[in-house]
Image (cartoon, rainbow, N blue to C red; front, side):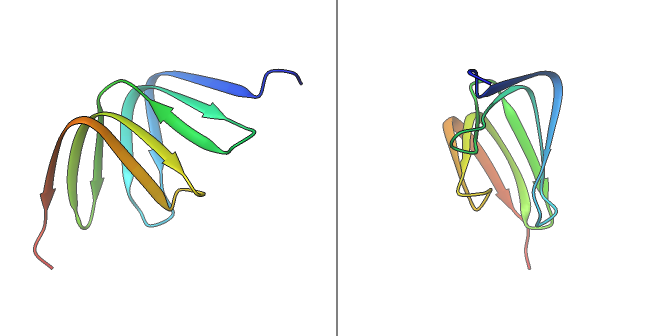
Length: 78
């Protein structure tokens, strides 16, 4: 295929192998670079804490996540 981009809309849920779950209204997947990104609010829940942000970039096979814009992180005591 020429177009190597997948657009996801409405109640998008992204799960990481560490058990983290992220929810947003839209996400774009670049199949050439294996990057996932979005510009809408995203919220994430894991056993380590919770996060809410205005946007995100996921790359390096999910090992690196950058949260963009205003971001609120709450860490749980371990």
